[in-house]
Image 1 (cartoon, rainbow, N blue to C red):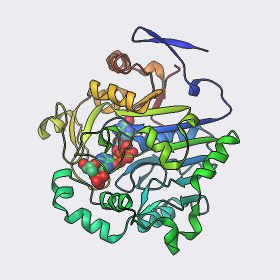
Image 2: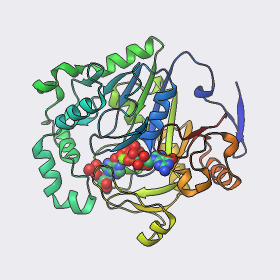
Image 3: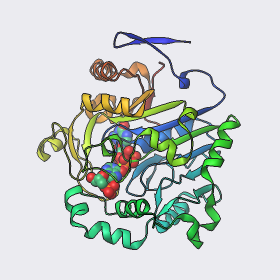
Image 4: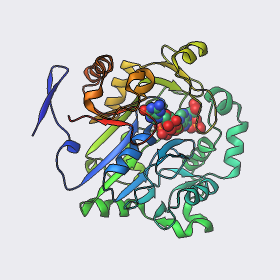
Length: 355
Ligand code: GTP
Ligand code: IMP
Ligand code: MG
């Protein structure tokens, strides 16, 4: 087995660089969300066979941007790798759905016939959205997305939330996602589990109380879709080359709005349209994320924004010395290699390092 020296220690190389007949991968966010998980998943979906892509995470508070064949999709529930027609698509029991959003996205993406929802997936109803938007604590202190996720998870904890199996409109999509995924894994298939939100928004490990309504690290993503931790081969943790955060809560090294603009780091939320707060990359936050997720590989997005000469680059030999210094510094702190370097919004703008 190959190995490589990182931070002074010899480390074994990972499943993705070996030839395996089957693989189960989790994609997780390392900062405060919006790292570009959608972009990384769309790359993997374009280049891997994939028998299943399963959505984990809180629910439609997420907004994943996928740019595929010059078309931009803003997805809140459908897995970002939907265009891989070999893959069956699943939404796990641990996730919350909004029926209207789900049906709209099924239409937009044309995945009718290969998308399934677990019998026990939680359903957000209008009263959850109203509660989320009217509650002073959720709206003003936490700065929630107003998508009803917090109140729905509150009802789930109270055991009064209605589940997917209780709704007529969802009958054609219902299945036991855990059974399906475990069957695929047992038969040597490839499974990609797509997390949403991110490590430091975790209810358990994040910057409480400025967090989402459940744990959002890799362990919970596996649980969300009903597979055990021993079935996971790789955890790809996604970082953006700078840090952004929407809503309230601490942000180390936060830059004034003018400075964010001057650096060209300005972003707006996919779901709420809110201006994202921004700060330089936080190395100690990254190290915590690697540990909390048990990451085996890292992906680094928006390198073209921090290093403009990297824009659209697709070859390892195109990495500039400045960009390489930054990459090495992250790897030294994290103790895990950066395999994917994203250089633009399209699923094709990516450097895959031979590590
Ligand atoms: P959540 O699950 O809501 O946390 O979202 P996400 O991690 O999928 O990220 P989101 O799509 O909300 O935000 C990332 C933004 O960056 C999107 O507009 C992407 O199109 C864009 N993006 C992703 N990677 C790159 C990149 O390498 N370069 C540039 N310029 N844009 C990128
Ligand atoms: P909620 O999950 O809507 O209750 O929001 C709680 C906090 O998490 C707020 O600060 C939101 O801005 C943030 N949040 C939730 N989901 C996402 C996401 O997908 N990307 C970025 N921030 C998020
Ligand atoms: Mg987003």
